[in-house]
Length: 246
Image (cartoon, rainbow, N blue to C red; front, side, top):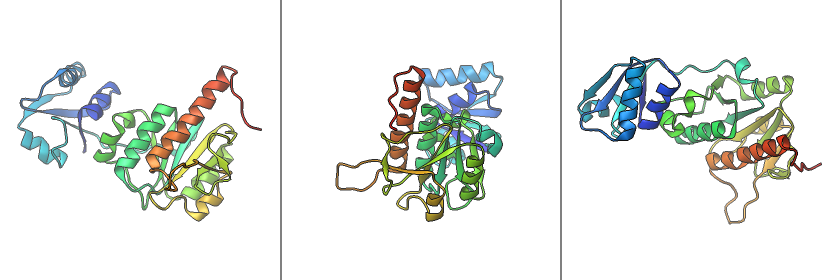
């Protein structure tokens, strides 16, 4: 049974009509956002129980639940075929920090990505920590788990995707690259970047120019930079205002 905790994840689960067994609210918790959750739960016929805060602490595994915990079916990973059907997918090559994974999911959804692809091994999976960091985006953005990232990139290429790897050694800057559609961005893990074999499977390596003395950004911040540049290009192209290099 999956446990969702926090106002954003629980509210978005209700809005997305995710099957929930029940919702626990800490006794004494209130406010307009909590009342909205209670009203949405009642409209969806999801039982709401008021419990001591200590009971929510035990269920959530911490006290950072903002006074609300939902119990529902475990999150299911999406099928690869379904994931590889959007103009933009994000592929993560070994992101291990669940907070980073959640932040990337949130950013990817906001930028218009259709799916996030993650590896089964040596990487963070979808957990309650990820759900909280994603602030509800998990209810809308499919997450696909694959056994081999290199093979996943090969399959994306077979489907017509152009693969852009974010790497500090990239030959093109992210704001000058000519992004072909459909697009797949590949982001490496914390402190390690892209694995060599994954790097070789990319069509283009792009980098973010750095003005300071450090060579790279946090992976979730870097994701926001490149994904919203992609979104800006798509919006400009749609209005006929784009000026694409090359």
